[in-house]
Length: 132
Image (tube, rainbow, N blue to C red):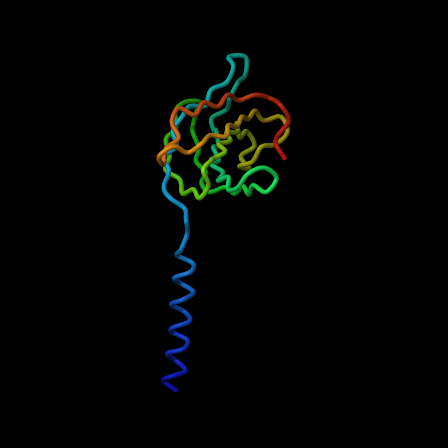
């Protein structure tokens, strides 16, 4: 009976160890969200930080962190990234659903990670159709 319990405890330890293993590292991402003066922006700008792992058609993208600004301006966040690039997407989230919806201004930028930092990322909001 004690042997059976030890096996379960051992398996649990192995599973927890595997879940804790990740090649992600903390990356400091800073920049600014702006918009043309002709574009009125609301009081909730959502910023998604999307980890880009791989290249070309095989690249995998996953949202690893989201934050919001009350107005256009500077941001600085620390996010866990596995890839060597981050896609930063800003949305003037007028309807409050956290994603780009028809009629909402948005902008995005893909930036390389250099020595665990992305500095001076500049996103300009525009009114093109939302990304798929």
